[in-house]
Image (cartoon, rainbow, N blue to C red; front, side, top):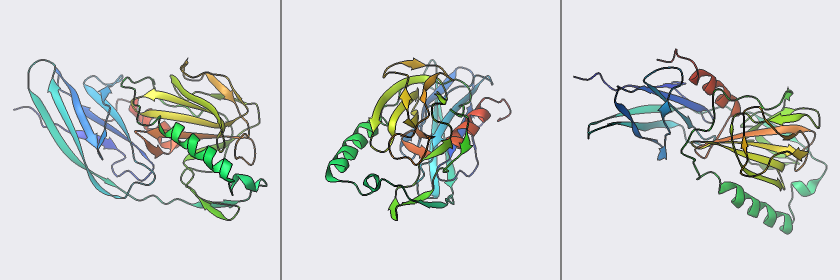
Length: 279
């Protein structure tokens, strides 16, 4: 009898906004044919550090309802019809997010005119069109890096009141840095979108493959073009304060399978992904 098929993951009980690292030991001659959780595809690929191990990342959206959810993995034989399948139950816990209140001098960035509102809606549609596009290949390599040196700013997930008005949660991490400091690609990928947006200012969006996107906001200058391939650490632009910003900083955001996740969690889980002690 073949050994039972087991799927492991970390953290064991992920919280809202976290990245989940999953791995499975795949018998010789088989591969991960299909995997799903929350009606989303999981992109498993062979590990670069552990023979026979396949890894995947899954994003728990910041707004995902806590609870228990099923995750299924099906293996198939490289030759022949044989397959094996296992279903696991993963518990998602609530996350405690803080809040912040601040005032910006330009109130037109908070109470939008009809023209500004129309612009924002158009820009949101353009940005949202990226997330369903999941490049099958894994374009990144090794751990993701913090894209700029600086001091911590607003944390991921904070509930925000700006000029007394409640706004959407903060779905990135802010890094305070001097204007003009280089901002580097957190990992290798392809430039999916560049533009000058109402809220984000001059911004770059990178597609790292398998549903992983990173975004870099409020740049003073953009150094790359759409469609360009970039390497980990390559300069994308310079720190600025374009768009809605109270000072020079980088807003760094991550989407994983469309889910809004904490960039710090992505860094941590891809560091773990590159070790061979997760079996």
